[in-house]
Structures are given as structure tokens and as C-alpha cells.
Image (cartoon, rainbow over all chains, first blue to last red; front, side, top):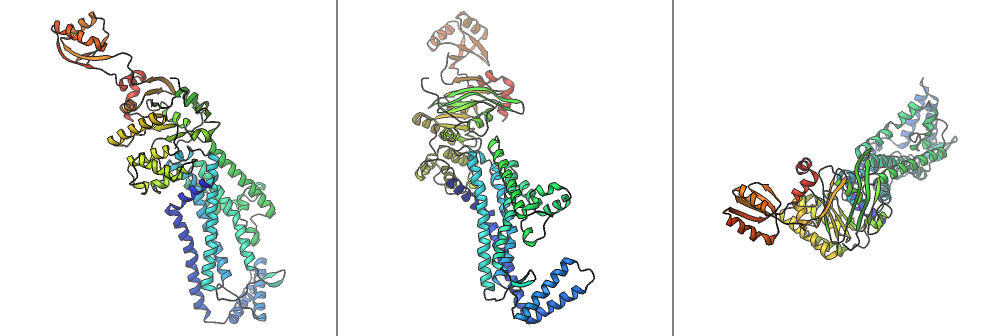
Length: 312
Length: 307
């Protein structure tokens, strides 16, 4: 098994596309970092942070006076005003864009890119063996088909985790080099109290919740890739579902069964923001549904791969 | 033959969507023997080979390798088989050596020394560390043979192995197969549509048509000897041949006569005495192509040659 994964890992890194993915990911972290740094130093000279906070308060107060302010917006504006007033009263400057933590929070958005790259690998790792004909060489060996498929699945996830690790390490390094010296505290309102934000906890939580979409998209792409042996179909379908998933759920939201499809649940970050896709779902319920679908996707992938007559 | 067969196909059948592609195939393959596998296009050669290598699951019947059923003891049975199915497809983005390393890892007990030994045997040592995408078709065939031999299989299945090899390469390949069959007792099963190639390489041929085995026979043993005789006038020759009770057929400008070697001088003397003009007397071997034509009928052979 270990040897099979060693094989898959070797094949993976002999493809130029893999290196391109890693290079793109690093570029996508470093590039915006430099732009932000430049932007920050340009604007920071003009006004002090106290003046800036005062401006923010005035802006929000103006907006509150407007006619069409919804309840949600009103609450948000008031929270922001309270936070800014707290900053002025207690002499706590904000970080704006310029801290290690905020940069790493920004970089956590790269998870979308990482999911895309992992999906590309999941979609092609089985289907490419079919399209090049090497599947014949691979399957006429003293290794069961189940083992071969498992080695491919595990390699896909290890690659995904590797990209996540690259993301964390590179964003930490870049953040430290560019914004390492910056001081400041992030604040938020909890139960009407202004408190210091637990940035690192939030960040870890965000990574964890993003895992839902990461795992489900990867498994889905793996399923389509190994059943239909077409990587483009697998990538296309998976991307379609992750972009249009929200629309589909909205469209189907008047039916009861929408609760039981995985698209409704795969984006777990909805529990972080509190804007749920549909009403009445809870985290344990979502996790259960996702687990059921994950098992289903895997079962179909394995059955079809093991029963298939190879004619490639 | 007294030895135990190394591979047995027992009632092997395959039905896809109601179409019976292979019907009740029974073939025994023995150690040290090279068996050719012939058949017109669509006869089921590739399907049979795919079932023998575990790429396809038979609808009925089984493949037994060294006493083990391929269907039940897959991992153990397949480890005795070396395979090249059609063109050996390699990972083009890796070097030849990395490809071999890749396949070696999937077998037990294939050492780095063994890889180097196989590379030497197939004559690729100069180019083995270059990417497969730079290889010619012949070099890929050699690499394909190398990966099939890595684990010292007792049974070698080759689907059109000489495709793309140059004449010297084909000859070398043939010698090599003969060598491992004779020295290591490897049983070889070769499918090809190059009839002359099969004729030179094999001890035995199995012929399949429409999914059924229609003949299996040894090649080099002639049951009776034939001679081609060209002489004139033809009528007199025919009368003479009839007089001595020889079976004969008219072919081109002469006759193919079934006659023992020791009777030839006698026949020549007869002809000379009868003042028949004798142009040629030569041994006439029925080529495999003729035999193949006889067995499968003319229509299909045209198709097979067109491939």
C-alpha cells in the first residue's frame, strides 16, 4: 500500500501541472500581500487612526439616518459604531489590513483555490490512467483493484493537505515578513459587549469548516472521474455544483427534500457567518448528511472501479 | 506431453449485452512452449487475452494459472503472469527507469539489480534514463517487454509484440522469447496477425474464429511431405502421377504432389524415361497462411490482413 502511494506520489510530481499548481498558490498569496503592504503604507500617512475611527462612526451614523435601512444592516451599523467608540475610549487601534493574523485570515480564502486544485487531481488521477492506456499496465499486477483505488484516493487527499500546509506556512511567512511589526487588536460584539476577537481560534475554525466543501468536492470529483473516466466532465460538474450549488438549493428550497442533498450542507462556513442556506438545519445534522453522502460516493466509486471490464 | 499445463482456460465464455463474444474456450498451455494465437479481426483474441490478464471478468468458466484460479486468487495468480496488452503504454512524462521502478514496486522481491539486469537484456541501457516521450515505438516495445519480465513470470502473454520493431529487433525478440522458453521453461502466449512471424516463433498455434476455438496444432511437424514439381507437357505428367497413385493438386505451372522423400529419385527417373521435360522439383511446405486460410475461410482472412 505504501509502495503504491509512493508510486502515485512519484507520478504526481513528474507532471508539470502539479508544480504549476503549487507555484500559482504561492503567487496568489505573495502577490496580494505585496499589493496590500504598498496600499497600507500609502494611506497610513495621511490621517491618524483616531481620525479614521471618527470618520467611520460618522459614516455609519449617516447611513443609519437613511430611509431604507433593514434590521440586519441597522444592527451591523450599530455594532460597528460601538466598536469604534470603544477603540477611541480605550485607546485600542485597529489593525485594518496590516497584521499577521489578518493577512493569514485573508490567505485562508485561498482554500477555494486549493479545493479547485485538489478537485483537478481527484478528477484526473483515475481517468488519466484510462485515457493514456496505462491502466492496463497498472491492473495486471499482483495488487487488488481496491488497493490501487485506495492509494489514488489517499494520494489525492495527501496532496490537498499538502497544499493547505503550503498555504498556512507561506501565508504565515509572508505575513510575518510584511506585517510582522504591526500592533493592534481586533474587536467584535458578543452579546452586546465589545470584546477582543479570538483571531487564531476563528482562523482555525474557518479552516476546519472549509474542510466540508474540500472533502465533498474532492470525493465527488473522484466519483465522476472514476465512473465516467472523463476528467473534464468531473472537473466541470464539480465546479458547476460549487458555483451554482447555492442557486440550486434556493430554487429547490420550497421542497422538503432539499434538506437531504449534500449541496445544502457542504459549505459548512454557513454556520460561521450564521447565514444558513435553508432554515432549521444544525451542524450535527449537516455532518450526518455529509457523512452519508461521502460513504455513498466512495461506495459507487469502488464498486464501479472493481467491477469494470477494462477495454481502454 | 507429460508435463502439467501451466495455464488452463476452462469453458471460458464472455457475453456482453447478449452477444456471445467468447464461447466455451478450452486451451491448455505448457511450460517451455510458445503458443501463437490467431484469428481474424473481431474473433475474440483481445477479449480472451483481457480475461486471461484479469482486465475483464469472464461470464462463465475460469482461467487457472499454476493451479490457482485467476478469479478467486487474483493477486497470487497474476503474480506469475507477465503481460503486454497491445501497445505497451508507459508513463511518458517519466524516464524509462522510473517506469520500471514504478512497476517493480508493485511486485514482491524485484530488486534494483533485477531492474538493471532486465534493462540490459532488452538492450535499453543507453537510453533508460531518458523520458519515455523521447522513445521510438521500437524502444517502447523493448521497455514493454522489460516491464513484463521484471518479476520473472512463468507465463508471458503478448498481444502483438513485434508491432513497430525493425527487422533486426523482431529477430532479436524472437530469439529472446525462444531463449527464455527453452532455458527458464516460461510458457509464452503470443497473439499476432503477422502470420509469418507466428510461424517462425511458435511451436503451436491456436486458431479462434467467432469466439470459438477452431483448431489447435503443432507447427513444425509435417504429417506428410509435399513436393512441388514443374514439368511439361502437363497431361503426360498427370497421367504418370496417377499411374503411381500419388495424390496431387495443380498449382500455378506445376503440381503439388504428396510423396515421400525417398521416392523422389524414382519418380524423376520415370519422368526422364518418359521424355517429360523437368524444370523443378522442390519441397513444398504449406505456409501457415495457407493453413489459416483453409481453417477460417477466405472471407475473413482478407479482413485480417487488412488490419
